[in-house]
Image (tube, rainbow over all chains, first blue to last red; front, side, top):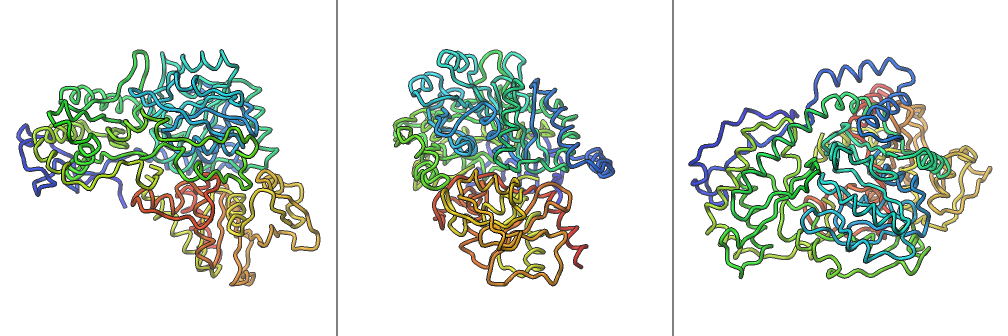
Length: 441
Length: 184
């Protein structure tokens, strides 16, 4: 089945926003046949690289190493281990940082489950804290408030591709003698003042799976290390525990080939995000992602915050209802906005039930670290879940400019049909997202 | 190659394994140890459980991995050399048609020797065991269903630590092409 779109989109017309909403039977902004987005860009060079590699009898070992070396240099990390997945890369990053069974590791309550699973995998205990309401990354003030004597590391996530507040977190870690480990799985080519994510902490894990801005065409990951000590510690940990985390040579070869295209992919995403942000800023009620000065957001996901009052919608309708209504309307128009996660991580079954490896491991190693969380501990996470939607793959290369224009038209159309938004919002059988079954993505 | 299309690529390998080996259910893994982990979890092996392994695994990464999981490992020279707990382990590349495992058991199959990277499968006749195996994987079948359909999926066992044991679809596809040629 081909990934390629059937036809190029034309530019939208100014009158498109006045048309009947698709959810009400009108013509969608992007019709079904035009909704495919092509990513990654797979060319004959990728196929050729794989064919050439077949001649190398040592390919199973050589190709992943070659890939790791080339990508390590790109990121500016000193050492790297290619892995079978992002989760395993995080596991190794924590092991390399010297995290021990029974330790606590501070993680954000809003992230993909793998971040906290990796903490369990080193038999440490995640200590969940809230996020910053503007950046959606780990909130330094909440980190400091939640430190205990068992905490040995802080594991910020560069959520959606925006680097976490690393200067503030580094300061906290230095003050308290903690390791700073990155989850850079969303942050390929994201940077703070030209230092790439993955090269900022003592170690980092990064997913390279098919759904990421830098994909290896399947499952893959890479662990980065700042110094030889942490790298050797991770290597020794792998051997001591018999962990089979090798990256397949096939995906490594694909990754090397794609690395040549990464700068282009980055430029396309920045172009698309800049245009979308600039135009959304002019549409009342849609707030594009905030990017602090000196930071580069790599837009693995693009989160749009909704402000119903700015849209002229009455306060008596909750923002959650308005969000769901807008999502349904935009989806019908052919714009794939959605929730990503619906529930803070501590309320997912593995962290609520605390079964672990069995016998309550790792929590039973440090009984004082087993904390019963309440929703009130994560007000910023809840507010974000209730009031925002994300675009996921839709900004990636090679997304045509016409497509971004269509997205903007769809948002403008929503505002132009404010009354229908209100009507739909009022009619919904609404349940806050965190009261539904926890979902992973 | 987005995650939705993963299932289509993997199911082809699943089908041929089920057909060749005569099992109803199969779960694919990106490491032999992953399939062992799933198989043991399906039989209720958890931290502190005693387990016997055959001589083939003595002082190997497999023994170390079982100890990492917290199992109390004993090497037994009296059991088949490739045994891990209740399971025989098959190397699919060197497997012969006549070596069919018992139909009422489950089995672990190593696919790594095909040379596309670490890969393996757990095969069983019991849906409950398959569900547990899939649940071990982040974005296994249960998680995918919850992610896309948001239905309550009650796990058959406790919510244990998950690992990303997902096999790359391109690796699955390449292995499948080899298996098809190997055994007709």
